[in-house]
Image (cartoon, rainbow, N blue to C red; front, side, top):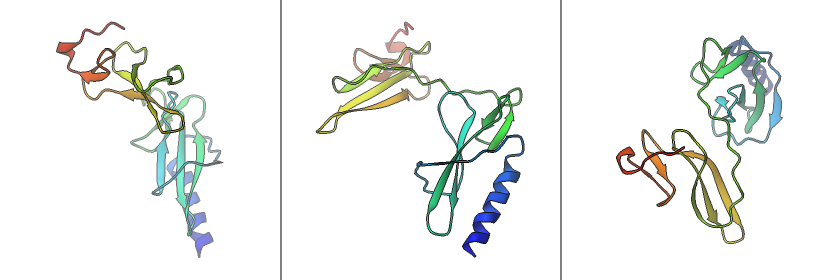
Length: 153
């Protein structure tokens, strides 16, 4: 019966993603629910699928065809003329040498990364964005109102 459900789920996935050349690659992504999810890597072409195999969740990475992008709302690949990619390519940031929040070069002054000491090494959380219209002020290492910080990209 478990094999039937897994086969049925794969059948649904092939029908849910009509405009892609589907090539599933097993991945080590952690899944907590079944579904299709975007991979935020700046390309809008990569996504992963989580399937419950009757025992646990298994994840598979997939990529849209060259002229296609993954639409996270529709949950399938579409023509790049039908869906505009809004992901920002990940910026290259230096390794952490101290704790704090640090500016990432961004014309809107909203991107930053966060470093902290976990007791044995520095951990970096990359590509963070200030919410709404707030700007990142590197002097006070915080997101602030646009009226209190002049963005100089």
